[in-house]
Length: 357
Image 1 (cartoon, helix red, strand yellow):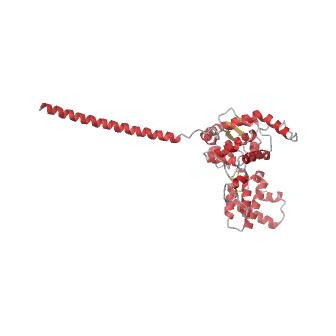
Image 2 (image 1 turned 90 degrees about the vertical axis):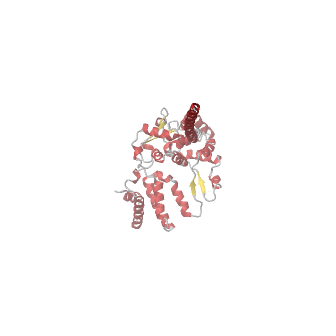
Image 3 (image 1 turned 30 degrees about the vertical axis):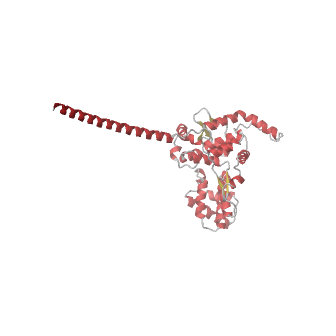
């Protein structure tokens, strides 16, 4: 049974007209993005990019038709990849179609904004954020990490993301910046005390599961609340962000840390590979962990928040230019000296001739 027929069977669709409409829409979607529905969910595709491409194809159609088509595709996604429910693109499209409500866009913070936000974050949120910033990992992946997945004795520190916790069920490797390592060590050192404090503050309504060995033994929703609290305290909450632009609302969901990684890393292809995006990056897929580590080190500086070294590239350029100027001056000086020597020789010869007379 193919994927589309399986979708109708599992979804308990029986109306012939509904099945006909849905089948036509789903087939058109895969025609537009140029992919086979049978293998689509195994290819680590960039779902949002594909949906945007289909949205652009629908541009000009009646709003009700667009809404219906997007709804069908969304249901198809939900059937085969539950993580698709968390994609912000659905919310963006919903607001586009409603028209009357402000358009919600995500704002990717820069280093200075992140400093302000992290100033208000507790150690748990800082550790979580630094892992996302330096790896581009999804929050659902981070919450499944175990101590043995992280190799702090390597340079750079390596994370083995097990196949069982990735979106496409494929193992991958990523790395941590020195900043992330230090904050993670601090979290591990204080985690027991932190969790005991939370238990006491909840009047023991919250009971810690001592058998849970995950680095972050919390639901992703709980961790997201910690991030949202930090951005609100730093003045980057939804209401604050709305006042920063004339139209629409900017948001900084936890997901923007993943986008920060891709935007600032300095090598979009390698960043996409480390993030677990679609598998067209054959160059990096063939590399082993040591080779990937070396490539990561070449760009790691771009991900640092507090320990960013001064950019001295302009200074090197200026010094090189100065050296070139000095070299030119020395050459000119040698030429002038040579010309002076020639003139002196001529004068000496003339003097000798006149003496003979």
